[in-house]
Amino acid sequence: MIDDTTLIPPVSWATVETILLRMATTEDKRLMVRHLVEGTRKQSPFLTSEGVLAELFYLASALLDSDYKPSFPNLSTFDASSSSSASPP
Image (tube, rainbow, N blue to C red; front, side):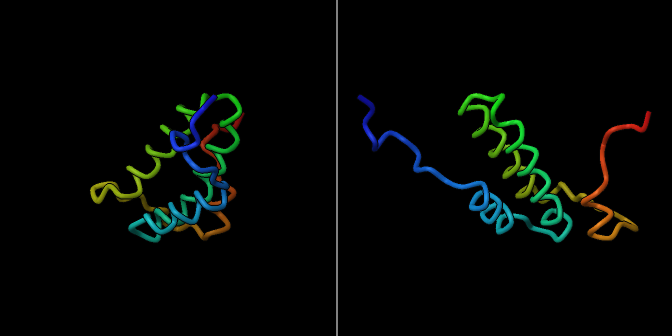
């Protein structure tokens, strides 16, 4: 039997997103959060529990890194949310 005190309490993806939004140190990083959480959520069925936690820790590290300064020049919020990193065929 597993001792409940050794487990992390369950948390929703919406809560994870809220926490990461609070951690984001710039507006550009806040724009990224929803997309990063969604990508992690979509990949989570293919990862171990440890893998999901590691991905979330990586996201948190990037959001708190003061030297990491992403920017989205000339993109509206809609443009940034609909862009893709995939190359066109």
